[in-house]
Image (cartoon, rainbow, N blue to C red; front, side, top):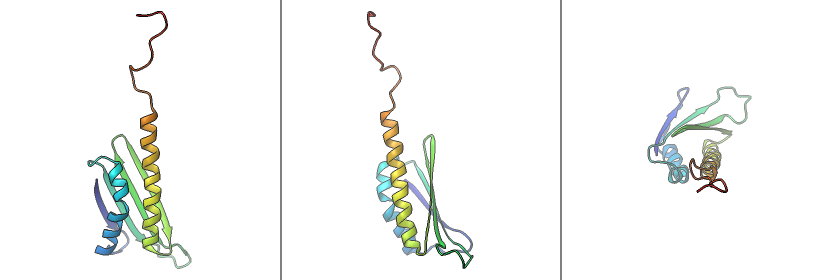
Length: 114
């Protein structure tokens, strides 16, 4: 999985945050195709009245579906942790749906036909 980490509104993304994002999303990376693309955007809300000002957003582009997650908290590392949990849950749900779906042409033949 290719991971792209960006900062918005003049937010600098240090190597420490980039490493944390890659470490936390390694679980997701094991469950999806190596061709999947993940865009993570880290930003800080400028309004001082917003208590959960550290926001992490992720967009995961898979074959045929796009999964999105947004989490906010007072601390950026906590936002990243919450984001990783949310994205892992969505990927698991998507994989289970795909596996449970019946395939074409595998249905039972009608009784009395050969």
